[in-house]
Length: 296
Ligand SMILES: NC(=O)c1ccc[n+]([C@@H]2O[C@H](COP(=O)([O-])OP(=O)(O)OC[C@H]3O[C@@H](n4cnc5c(N)ncnc54)[C@H](O)[C@@H]3O)[C@@H](O)[C@H]2O)c1
Ligand SMILES: CC(C)(CO)[C@@H](O)C(=O)[O-]
Image 1 (tube, rainbow, N blue to C red):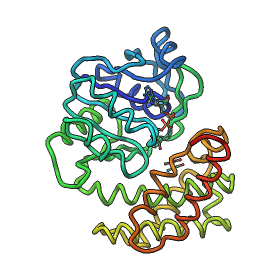
Image 2 (image 1 turned 90 degrees about the vertical axis):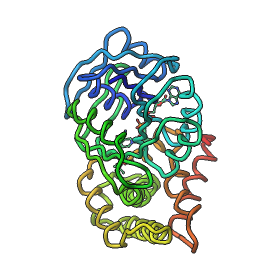
Image 3 (image 1 turned 180 degrees about the vertical axis):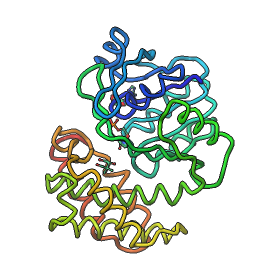
């Protein structure tokens, strides 16, 4: 299978590197990472240790690919969709956090777009090297649910490269469950400057649970069967399982870079039929920080 990975940063390099064990992979990213991969190959360290030699470039090749895997931050998805128009794609899979990525990609590209949730942890430690900070799984399927031959084919390709993969017919529920987790964990840990584990039994945990409950309520308003208890259980389970992690949003805040709050808590606020005060507050506070930092 010919795979194009658009957004060869942390997660894109990890998944692209794992896929390169079994497929013809081209990473699209930025210098100096791309230059190092071209010169010395890509090293994966941590929970998965391997060295591979995928192709790497800074621009989408005008070629045909069986799959484009999209792994840019949510705020770069529109630009990614435009850039991917240069290639001839049979399928697109987003493994990003946030709720709007698939719709943005589908609006710009003719290929079928699959939704994906990813619980692998990845961190680019230096150009040419990505650390797998935690094994997880990729769940993928049609964004609106159901089964599809494309999902089965893409799932088979990922599984064939020993990427833990689930082809799922319930991606709407999975996406909203992941959104509940991110709405609960990311902004709270970023603003409190704490690792995920601080939410397990610390005072900030109740804010995380409230944000998750609000998210589940909005999901139900939109016909998704997601109970408050299930959303809270997911936040608590993930916070415990990733207790030593600094969430991606905390890492963004510590780096002084733009966060994905618009696609996470902002997406909940945008879709809510009734007030979601915790998500509204978290969104406003993170946006306020971004504005003062000049990162939005
Ligand atoms: N890192 C993880 O452990 C992890 C886990 C689950 C989900 N995610 C999600 O995956 C997505 C990516 O996260 P990440 O941590 O890999 O972010 P990242 O910033 O490390 O990687 C994104 C990469 O895309 C590149 N990029 C953006 N626009 C580009 C363009 N036009 N051309 C070329 N390169 C471009 C950036 O330079 C960057 O290197 C996010 O939505 C994140 O929430 C990440
Ligand atoms: C699950 C998660 C919150 C763990 O840190 C991750 O999606 C993140 O950091 O964005």
